[in-house]
Amino acid sequence: MEKIIKVDLNDNEIGEIEKTKAHTSPILHRAFSVFLYDGDKILLQKRAKNKYHSGGLYANSCCSHQRLNQEFFESVKKRVSFELGVNENLDYKELFTFTYLSKYNDNLYEYELDHVIVAPFDKSKKIMFNKEEIECVEWVSIDHIKKDLVTNPEKYATWFIICAPKVIDYLENICKVKI
Image (cartoon, rainbow, N blue to C red; front, side, top):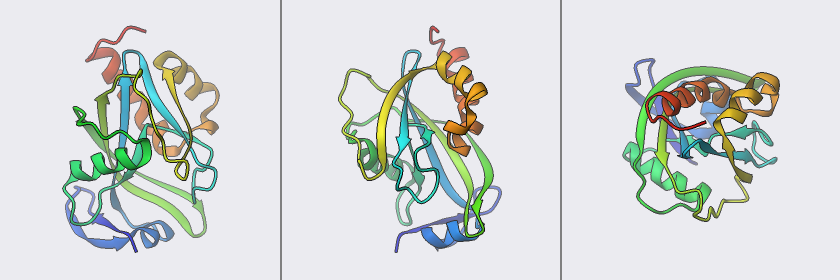
């Protein structure tokens, strides 16, 4: 039984909960969304079809939850390693948090306070993604993502649609990536 952290709307820890229980009733919990980028490209993952929600949809490079009894960035590093096979020490930077609620069916919810993390990563390095979690990974241009989120939003996970525009704004205006 995997335990994750329940939080209030200010991201204060208020307890622990089994991951499955957090998703079968709308219980707010801490999550993170990692965006690896190289220049004007962002690494997207297509979630494995067998995922219990959002299977077959595109999302950011890695998304998960802080585990109980782990420091926040320790959870980030371990999950990036587990999902993408990236074990090097990246320069992670937290950009912002947001809260969202998605109902997938009568017994499946995502109610998360999501920490959005970015890190530069050399796209020439090999990604050894976990096929239980991810169907494929692709380096996608910011320009393509911006257009595709407007014309094909159904291809993307809920949280990605919410946070990707702010990440793109950061990369274009703060990091000054060339499009």
